[in-house]
Image (cartoon, rainbow, N blue to C red; front, top):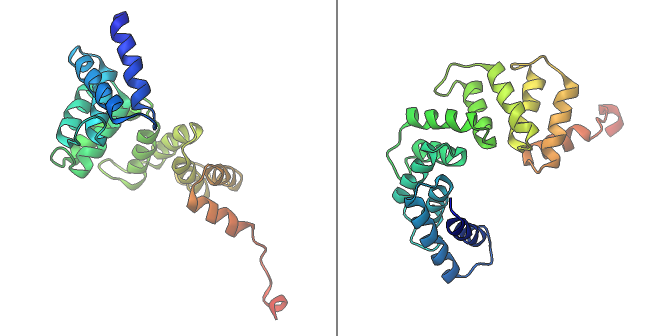
Length: 206
């Protein structure tokens, strides 16, 4: 990327990433992403997809968003790959295709996308499109959990509680459950609150 294209990239990124940008700013950013994407810049293709996906500076167009994400995904952009997984899975912007959805989920997970690692872990845990493998599920949950994903932390806590893919450990189950609760996972918060309440013997309640 030459200096002028980089300057434009930074300008468009600041606008796209801001909640305070004006409609005029967003239109300008969209035009920048469209031009830079035609030059083969992977991240620009991704942000072009974001614009079409969310109606930033242009009309929402999920088919065009899909095409832009596909270009970025083929260039190795892991978030674009995860977005393709979701679009294929739900049939948004393209025909529903669970085989292709899983293919892109694998690619995104290899690229260390946090949500992709968590979701692929769930696929292995439940046997969704792959052979059930609790050990692989726990490994993927752990990677996403260490990166701060509260859903993965919840899933890993349950894995330790139920001995799914790991040795049963109340200590590690509690550790990850509390992590998930601290990071805002509602189910973990309810679980921790319930476990923290003292058990009152029946006689004492009379």
